[in-house]
Length: 264
Image 1 (spheres, rainbow, N blue to C red):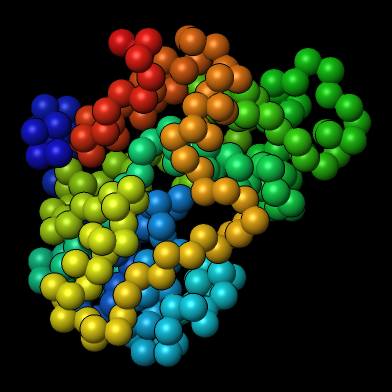
Image 2: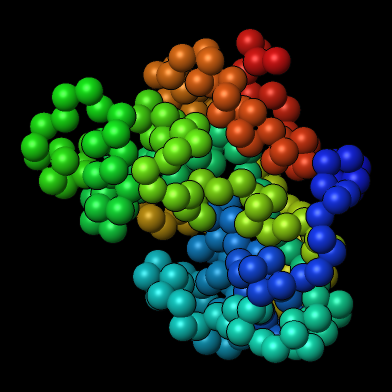
């Protein structure tokens, strides 16, 4: 990662602003800073932070909406500059990443294949209106039923009808690892083992472990390599190449291998 930062991002400003830390959550008792990368286990990490902070007896008891309604965990950007810098310099800084294409398939399935008024309204409608040849009045009205191919077209469009979203933004853009010196970068693929190793290291009580449950759409199978390949078979070779290019920095930085043989 340091190598890639030196090669591609050596010209970035070294001044840390609120914008750079907007996805970092603070746990003062165990001196942890956690950067959220959605679809890479962030709900279960946030649950764990809440348990460490004494807000809940165990992670299992915390509902999904409680985790994300925002008033439980303190965001780093809510401190003054001195408070931000002090924590960045002294706390253990952690982020978790996931295979980039798997992460966006997971995000697509979560937001577009399940009932979700917010995403269907905000993203579904403009996506259908721009990329579907003859959309029905119903589809335009509800924004339901965005296909994976339409989602990919939207991602690749420099003139997107609606901006990016934290669920599919690149991990390096969310957490700025070239600027913030993370102590740990874990991988979703070995999350349980790595998280529990990290928790022991921070001195967390031995009974605090990262929960492994999938909580958004528990009936759905967790997005795997096979499922990812199935979704990407719905787009053209060129689109696949361009999506890989889009997440290329994440691939390099977090040392993930090329997802398909025919990519260059």
